[in-house]
Length: 580
Image (cartoon, rainbow, N blue to C red; front, side, top):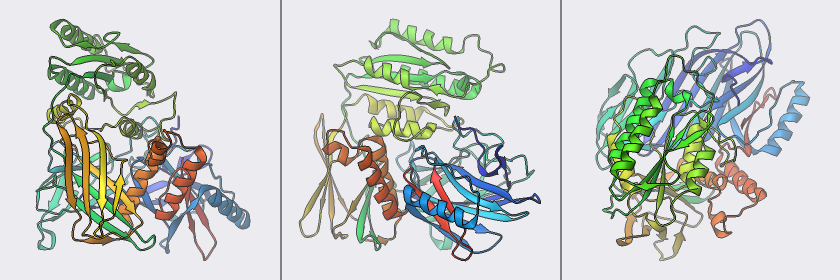
């Protein structure tokens, strides 16, 4: 477990350099967000300090810019290098500059980003800028999307404590936080709200009803919870296909996004509810009761022919309602309600001491091994962010958001993250509806060029009614706005065919390419890439490293296999950033 502080730190005790301020700028365009985090640090001691920088991150975002500025001088941009090559260059630079930098080797845990900064002179200021790309999350309304800025990515290793870079640290009494978001949609923006913070919204920027600017209304010294922004825009659920041309790679990338709405037949299904009832959940009474209410709502909403079971995950063990799933009946339903009631029985919230993490692997393994074989099975995981997987490496991720995202990717499902004060019924109803309908299978995307040539793509994300579908495809051949996309799939009702025409706009740059590359990298890490599928699920570690390294270098994305190198050509200073 790594409970080290974040930001710029120094010494064996990892003391924090004073964080003076944080500026966060986000540009939202349709379903994509570019987030730039600028942090200003100052060495307020009369000593030269050997420093390094650590930043928590979610695996699904793509870091594509890393910049360092010292004492108001020029900003130096980082470039991606293979880890082996970057290590060689960095070590050589350390020798030449007699800089006793303590460089840590990557251990393939891609929820931490670290770089060795080197010597910070007395009273010297350094500014670190990280820019990343991310998709907007689906919300419970099909014309709504959700932008989330994680406060501290609060996982067991990213606790909200004096070690967080969004929290006041020991060295500074004030650290102003500024958040400014510009939002641009393809249709009129109908509503913008935040269930987490007080915001101010400027509408009709430059006379355009599709553009708005959002900022915090109060001075914030502590971002103690996720910043959540919900955006509602007309026809946001409608299909859109964007084409981006990358001059550097001479490639085209398509981004297809829409919210499918299918009228599907319900089938007899098995649902297993895995509920985190550990001390980390119980110590927050409001959060825990909300989780219990969610479970009760799901149970009351179950169809009569549904089979279900409940697994309660405690600090060091787990309990099951039954040895196997049973059909919903008055007897089993009453037993389930009694089982849930015992979660809170004689529990003292004030005396609760949370354990660091809860092992989720064993209950998941039990649920899968004991699932019914004669009907579709779905797992519901209700948890806060203090869960981990201690026994098996699922992808490269250890943070809660990373672990859950990976589980849903591999299990072909999806996630819903809720704020404590948000209503849950609509989200849960939609998830339950998808869980008891026959799964949509054999999804394929047929890309037909203007000249009639076709490319068939079979590695397609799962389709769920009411849940946003976003897909990327990088094509090295020539593409144009006259190309068409045909999505086909099989359902209990028959074959599904959806046809899309690429928007009559060709974008230029690397943003869509970068997110596409990040998705592809994630599929290599999760073990469900197109190469895995072509080889019966097998891909050697050497192949994985080669593919990830190639994509990272090509699209300038930091991963567990690559590093950012920042070199000042004037004084020869070299900084290396990598994932830990």
